[in-house]
Length: 290
Image (cartoon, rainbow, N blue to C red; front, side, top):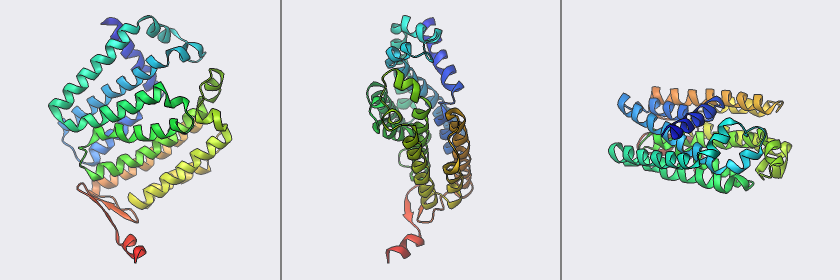
């Protein structure tokens, strides 16, 4: 039990230090924008934290052979995980049991992030992170699935906000593989950045920023498109610094989107307007279709 708790603490501390649990912040903003009750917010946020622990521990568990060969990850915590694999497996099973119990007691819709989000992350860690192109696609799907923790699956407005963050997740993963390019190349991990090279992967990240900006303008609000378009103009420089710059810009964009929904109870895109019960075409789309 002590070994399992220490492993969970190590996973949480490492991921929080690297700002890799940002989906929890996005989920919280969605919950606040949708005006969920404080109790519902607390339960869903706790579920999101446990789910993040599960997927990141599973990732570290499956990545052990690679991490032990990497100078950046071969540290005391990685070796502790290696020496206590049984405790790590037990911690994962305990987290699954706890998440199933919460979903059964509170909202069966929470099975969506658990099954889809957890499943995609397992596939990513086991195989897809070594498949160029699939690594980024998987993280986009994972980004959307993990955020469904914030709302019932019938809430169209929640899906609109989650879809925006799914595109952001694809951008972050593209920059992540650029950031890890040298270590992945040296340990034989074939990611999109290793396959394409850093310049073309950076061009892909910028293309995804443009795609996200267009989607935001069409379905959320035109002003949400401004920060990602600023991000398109930024030079790469140090990947770590660039990663944080993009996170700030996309965070500001989503903060505006969530604030708008909180104030108006709907999106205000050029072509699509979403309410909790449905998304409909705006007059702009109607005119274009005539």
